[in-house]
Length: 260
Image 1: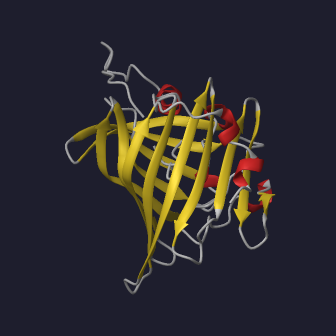
Image 2 (image 1 turned 120 degrees about the horizontal axis):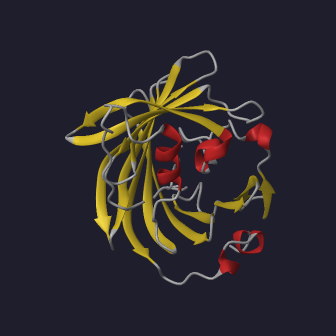
Image 3 (image 1 turned 60 degrees about the vertical axis):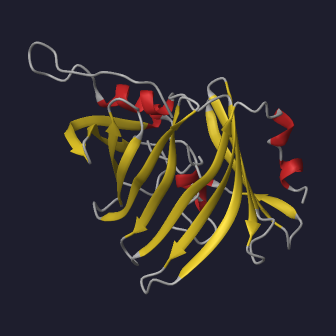
């Protein structure tokens, strides 16, 4: 239910009030929460400059700059990421194309190869450009592909949240056995996610330390993915962002991805 916008990659809205019915039972279910997150307002399109910091267990940091372009086209979304620095990753690009009713397409462009290659389903558990996000994390998870169970309510740093467990339905390809999300009730934004492997082990934690309303849209200004297995972290920071800029559909093409 969650995903990197910094990627997918990395950015939400609508103030909603949820409560309990007269019988004391939640007047909302897990699928409804998941659908509100999936459908939240993120503008018609967006252009963002961002920063990715990789931090190993010893505290050593590698900082990268990149640009993210996103566009919503009806029920589907598209995203293009282009790394700007440092030199060893400059020009590397990543394209995400949602297809209504079918699997999301992903393409990675490496300047040294001068062409884009498609990321196939069997590769989506791999690390995205050596970060703690995998290719699976870089795309939205269709609501209908998971069972969503509302398991409780919790307050995170004064923000009331719904707590929802998502488990892949039979036939859904996922590296995760379960994903637990803490979703802000009045923003439809996941503020924390715990990722569990198929054996039930908690392997990664996603957090949103900084959130800001920009042009009426709740925007993740900083997100953190912590890989608990090797104590490695990836921090994504939004430096600037503009919504509803009028991006052309041609921006989100393999041909444009390979133009560098």
